[in-house]
Image (cartoon, rainbow, N blue to C red; front, side, top):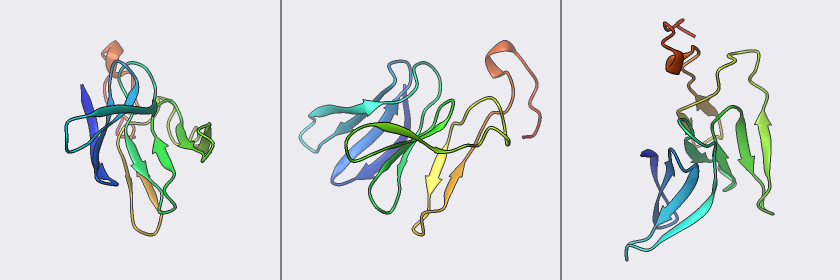
Length: 112
């Protein structure tokens, strides 16, 4: 399932829910797994102005130049059910969404 489609550096990128793959597709139809996000439902992508990739999931993670994934920000005080959508503006401000409730367990939204 494709999530968070983005055009970046002449390729179509997306997070593949279920496999946890971050995939890039070029104009010739070639795909390349560029990294991994969280397995299962969740995970979206965007880039900081300096080119580092951000990935949502249980935490907001950032890909470092060496390929390692590190926590970008501790958001546990905001919501405890992980992060979904993400947008980074041109100044580097990061906006994330959270379902903030037990969606898969049938919980009711809390408005968080």
